[in-house]
Length: 493
Image 1 (cartoon, rainbow, N blue to C red):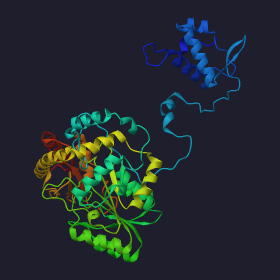
Image 2 (tube, rainbow, N blue to C red):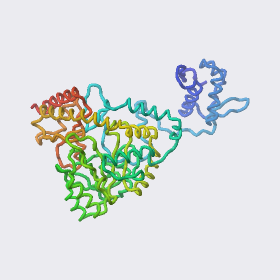
Image 3 (spheres, rainbow, N blue to C red):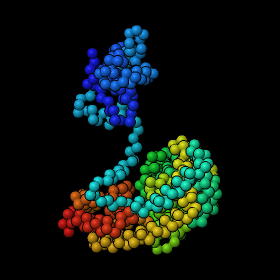
Image 4 (tube, helix red, strand yellow):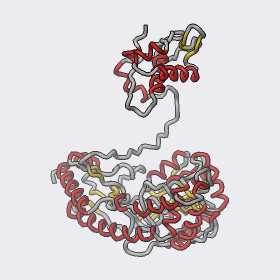
């Protein structure tokens, strides 16, 4: 007789019904071959007494097992493990292997060799220098929550609870058209906009539609690494060109056009990622003219457009495009908080239509309630008020960060105070290496950003992107103290 009394454990205070707990454990015993095919199960009264449960619990358990096909009931004989169940063919694991059974797939699959980025795991007492993110503590969560509740309480809100448009919520599309036309100088209609889950989805959709194997995409010598990975995943041939104080060197793009068929140029025109420089007005016009002449797409990433501290931002390339060459991508995430995955892709209607079709395959639609919330949030002016508020805070943090960085290791690095964005591009003297400094800083509770991330072209710029926006004054001072200690530990200077 199988020892049910000692083999089965029931959690009487748990949320799952006792009969389901029992049936799941019996199934596990069958799968582990401890109850072989045609083994007889105890009578309901007997098992109920052994496990100290009501007989109805055992009856319900057996009915569940019967419905699932694990057991069969033979009149006047009892309940048996189904005789036709095949033995589950599994490897016998040693005790030391049981903990890693879920780490190895039992089938082959394709790995993306281009994706190497690892995100830091928060540890108590450890501080992080990110590569330029907003401070989530400044998120206007109360305003957003109030708007969300108000939206959810509407009488006809049920109309938005089912499947919707793959283009995104219509109200948000209309609001964004009005907002972007006013703030970015665009001349678009609702037909030109697709709502995405952040700018990365917009880059991915664009790559899906534009690029096939070995087609050429032009990027900066230093570039936003996530876009690199996206293009490489499409098997694109990446052509890197120089980046100077005025952004991408467009003369190099022209030389490439004379040698190769270019499919697209990717550019973060407002604050080049990672170096933070702005693409000059002259070069913007040059790039648009080349796109028209050679029929390639410009993927313009609206990165940190609203975060300008010294002057108003230069209008995007998309505002000057009259030939349908620019795909303009941006998001609300960076302006408010990364958790709100609301972005946009703007292009000609035919491109947007096809992007909507592709989006429907991987992400049937967005979060309609969240999109309605942000439509109201933008329309009533809350977004503009939030941007004005954090601009003052981030400008102060930029100035403090740069001043303390100069004090801490200024004689070992070079950097320009950025005119906008949320990070500083810091070049380390060639006598030193970020690897050694990062290892030393770790011992002092400071994690530097991925110093390898922006040197995929192996040009050896010895630079790192240091974010300042996510930390307050006290945290910035402590970060600089730990950075100074790390530098001294690494090089005894």
